[in-house]
Amino acid sequence: MTESTVDLKHHDEARALFGLRDENLRRLCATTGAQVVLRGNQVRILGNEAQVQQCTDMLTRWRRILEQNQELTSYDLDMTLGPDSESKPMIRSESLPGSAGTDSFWPNRATQEMRATAGRDRVGQIRPKTDGQKVYMDAIRRSELVLCDGPAGSGKTYLAVAMALEALRAEHVRKIVLVRPAVEAGEKLGFLPGDMLAKVNPYLRPLLDAINDMLDSEQVRRYMANDVIEIVPLAFMRGRTLNDTFMILDEAQNTTTTQMKMFLTRMGLNSRIVVTGDATQIDLEKGVESGLRDGIRRLSHIPGVAIVELTGQDIVRHRLVREIVSAYESDTNQDVTPS
Image 1 (cartoon, rainbow, N blue to C red):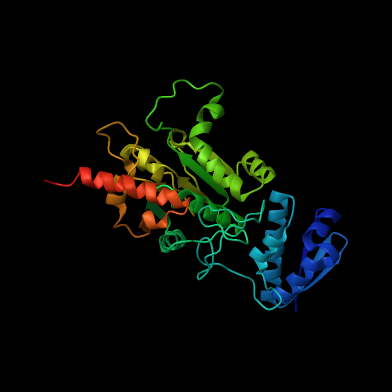
Image 2 (cartoon, helix red, strand yellow):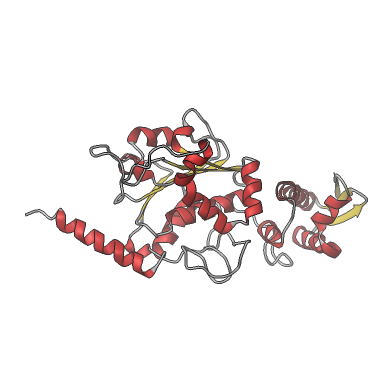
């Protein structure tokens, strides 16, 4: 028989960890097979060595979640113990960010209603809606670097953000960094008023919209205030090395080859990068090569790098968006048809 003790900070922490009438505690014991005894602020864990170690690890993860989010929800329990913890062992995902064979990702905790956006189903979970989206998600699970080229409305950014949040929740990473180049789409806006954050906000707004759709506003503020989620212009990435970080570069078609190289080389230990863009909507000056196209060409043969190309069949934003994209692509193809 092995025994271990964990000292809690105060009684409120014990109550938050173990739940109403010790419901969380019963799930913990059923999953790990260990015996847990709470006396005052001290937790005694009894069992064989493996059971005690597993139970101690679970408590440590719960305390981290509680410290970070000020609450331990049923979703947190399902993520760490499994939804059917009475009969299932603790989930240990070997891949990022979910265990193999599942297409369910970040549940929308702010609302459970269905929305007609990429990957949202009726129970508020994010799932691939097309074969292309499934290939995209599987690539993010398997590969440390994913470059995704796809049309507007195909869920490139939305699904990447969802998987980054899932990786954060599962403690595969400690931080999420969302990046966009500050390139205007065809019109010059001139000097924008306000401080630095106000000036770059219009460029970063799509990333904020995706996050706000998946997290409640209070949680977003807490994550950003604690630097757990960081949203920055591409120019601010130079000179950094990011460990234990999930990085997303959005609108990558508007990066130059130099900028793309600079961003990709920010990757540190235990980090992941997802690069998204639409090569048909390049807003760079004429004659400047897109970093997305160049990166796909240069990096496709490197182990650990996945290249995903979504098509018009993967557009789920609105039924008309697919037709609009198809109409513009058809017109473009006619323009470049050789005589």
